[in-house]
Image (cartoon, rainbow, N blue to C red):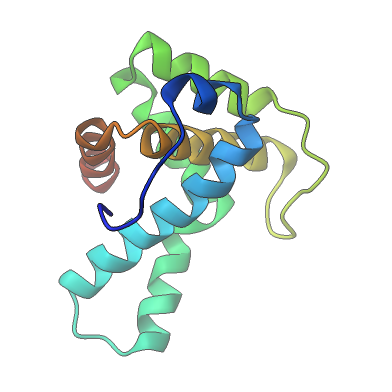
Length: 132
């Protein structure tokens, strides 16, 4: 996503709330999933949407993060912890509190990597997501 300018310095990104990282991470991950589905399917938009839900719902993201944990660096684990532990007053209607916290942590990691322009690592994480 080189066409979207990311202006914040790394130090400024570190000061953002993990919920802001998750806000960005949610859209970045969904874009990755949608592009991946389009690249590997000739399905119509409704079918693509229904398929993408399997990857982006809270339970799926929580499960993905659990599988990814052993591949994360210490710094990434700290980001995940911050995302998981942030006070969030919203719970998805189709997720339990634990899965929602883990999905927020996953989205926070994706958002943090994206905002700090760690594109190679982000691609590695995406590749791992598809393999696990």
